[in-house]
Picture 1 (cartoon, rainbow, N blue to C red):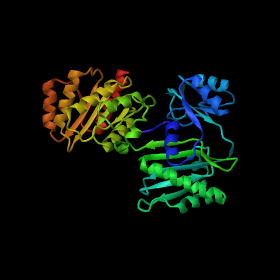
Picture 2: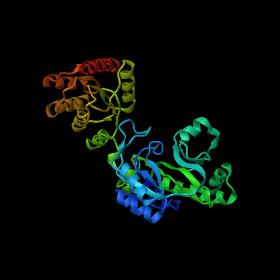
Picture 3: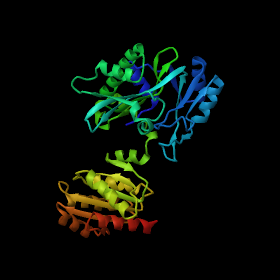
Picture 4: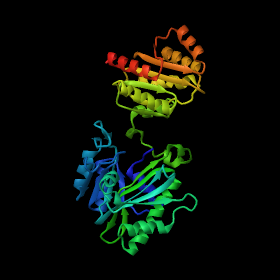
Length: 388
């Protein structure tokens, strides 16, 4: 789960991370009033996407009139960045912050290193750039400190990062404290990412989180009730939001025309690869898991039939702990209750497959049968092409 910059800064401020003075504005008049109070300000579109500056989503206003004008241009628009795709994302609010006199820009972030199975603090003197660009062009500039889950963050780790970036001793101490505070926020809020880019050194020698980004582990949200309230579904893909409402948590919208329903992430990835092998593209990743629930199957059909990009559906089910007869009952119920107007290719095998085939045959459901994953992928690609 992602949140907006202003929300991330509010959380970090609670953990002792210094942030600029500023407030949220949802109207041009509010932006003007904040600028009258703070003086020269920066107006920042609040969207769940990076690259805002290059896309015109971050602008400096020297006067209240200018702040009002910039806010009027941003609010109600759709911001298109390299992370959003051509459709962009809506701008419903802007963050109006006091500008800072910057002497140097740094990078500071915390992520999970899955290979090491540890949290890692990353720091770089190349702040203000995408960290991926730094990794590609100057990997030696990225410093790391791995955090032991038993001993936790240690001040010497922050000091080592600070000295590694060439900071002088007073700033090293301040940086070490700030890094520790960022890690505390990361750990206690079940984050998957906590990033300050840039973390600036001001001309008066202070550290300031000029930008902030927090992403949260969805599996930890059940114990982060306050974080759940910060979700902004207007920034998310509408079909992915709908999938959660349909009881489907493992759904990702893709750009192709073959809708997929698969049980198991590994089989789902193999199915997507097979579709690509035969010249097609999947419209989604949808893993219904080890399910023996008719409504879950109906929910999957409801999800795919709502997507206008789907020209054919490929149902690829291997019944291990899942029962094919229950899946078949779900398919029958879907045809009864939904408008399934696109061709459906089904590869059903495994546990209770004979009973499942009997149920489908007696219901008179017209499916394109497939013998294996590859055969189903080819038939689904052909069916989608014929339907376009």
